[in-house]
Image (cartoon, rainbow, N blue to C red; front, top):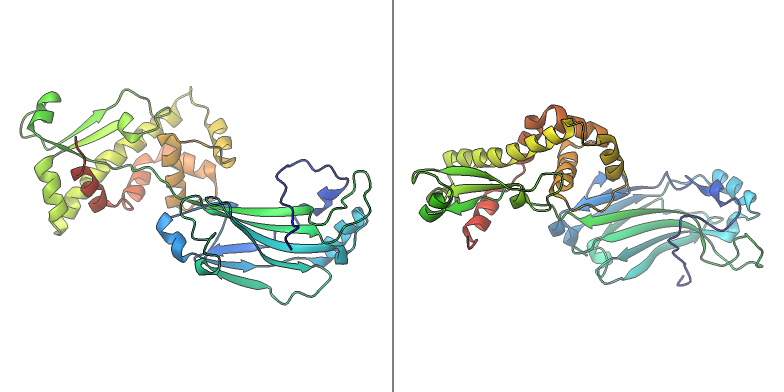
Amino acid sequence: MNNLRIEQRKVRPFLNVEAFEGLLNGIKVAMNGKYLRGEKEYLDPAAFADVVLDIDFVLNPADIAIAAKEIQLSLDQMSLSLIAYGNTFKQSAVIRSWKLSEANNENTLTLHASDLPAILPDKFGGFNLVFAITLSKNLEPKPLKVYQSGTWLVKREYQIRPDQDVSFFSPMPMDLMKKRDLGLPAKSLMYLEYGDEEIQFASAVEDVIKVWVDEDVLTNLQNNKSPAADVAAMMLARAAVGSLVEQISQLFQSKEFDLDLYEDALRADAADDRVLTKFVRRAHKVLGSDDWQQTLQAIKENSQKVASQIEAQVDLRDAIKKALNKDD
């Protein structure tokens, strides 16, 4: 099956192939026991090594046959293929391929990372799964007609990417010299320093807000495993995350910010490395919403509730450890 052609263009130079649109929508993919809601999903980089994919092949042969007649094809001239490819090393593999005229007894399929060790465990670039109905044999070339074996008639692609989320809680140790620089009393325990860059433009959290914490307090929080220390650390997270989400809420309420246009960009999954978008995507994931508008409204109207849900997932100990290792 090495002659399979994966074409990237959206506009097909063939007549009536639009009849195949939607015929793969019954196929479902679950990753680590959870069905994918969209065609792009983010996964913790550490989870790639043991990722498990469960695939349900649900097709309607009658609908496919009707679409095939639109372009003068029969089921025995078409195949359904499943292809996987990794993005870092550009490896690819045809996992399954069978003619649509033949009975397929494999209605479900489970894949583990170890089944495709050069593709599925790719924690740096992630991987793609492509389902495609393709032409299974060469036909006589005719203008605007599909004729070359391996050409896809319809395809559905899932993109699995590593979740390279920005850290929203990054406390920095504050010694006496730093307190003097900030104009603070020697006994100050915490200070929020607001940056010069506005939240809608910043690409780093530190450009928006810096959380300075007395270095002795940070050291104590790192070494102290008591419930009281956890409460204190949670208060630090609330100060950082709460301030950040409040700024985003105010931005969404401003007349100058086009929330509808921003929602369209989120739906299109446009490339965007701003702190704003990384935060909104994290909120969308934490809230478990299928609707971007619902997520944006939650941040706009109830920002502190969203902050509470996000801060509950902050790895406080790891954030503090990283802070103590900084050379500030």
